[in-house]
Image (cartoon, rainbow, N blue to C red):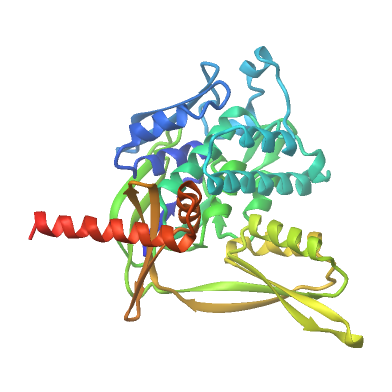
Length: 418
């Protein structure tokens, strides 16, 4: 199983996460070039070598219309009114405009879904923090184009690295106060505090905001769990440096990528369920989509008989501990239930790895799983469907064509290297 561990001993911000994950790629410059080719309005990503506390790492820079956001600390999402946007038509974006922006970018479907899910997490947290409906939340603090760039970059990097499991350390949030558009707020800021509910956090002597709303939302979206470094075999490490230097401290997010050891083949999940007998099929389908966006790993329904012999539906969602609070809210928001049941379950998991095959039909992802004396492989459905549509054949024929190509390639490699 490919395991990614994020050490947030100095918090987390979008630029720090970008730098850490970028350091893990074999060709980070190629990623930067492809990112800049997306055409996010006015945005350019660059990277440079940097050192904090005597440790070398990567500093990710985002410029918007030639100017870089942020001040000396990495609370860049709070402190500034983004002067370049005044020059180019300053606007506070709502969720509809964020959705339209991501729809305009040429992104893989999963990346776009993850990016929008991150923004929905932020919108919900801002809504609760400031007492306004989600529809009235304006991203004047995290909607600036540099934050859009951070979210997009991290989602693309997660797709490129394709970890099977992401574990995050307890998050250092800092202490003191932070200045933002709403005034001077305590650290962690109200929206950040809501995003980190259920997550192990701690403060300390460091003054300032170490974990930003964007950083918190990205951790919530991608973390499979939170805790100490699991048993693993590290294969690569990356340090994403923050802008500010703290004497005697490495101001960075550290990312370790490697293989989970055999003993790390179980984890704990949460099972939510409720029974409804007054929702239409369309309403249930809509609720399931929102639960998936909120972090659910699985959502499914079961037809059941309820009181007074009424037919009903059991709705069940499975999620990690980090998404517990978000899923609870979504169940009450999008279903008619008056109560949600929770059960904790332990699951046994196979080690998983995704390999991208460069085939004559285009790139095809193959998912391999192994463990407990079992080994199996399958091609990603979306890639199979694309090949089948392009060639005008069935899924089964597309699968056989790829299998035959792969078998021939392996045979050729054996002949070259007996």
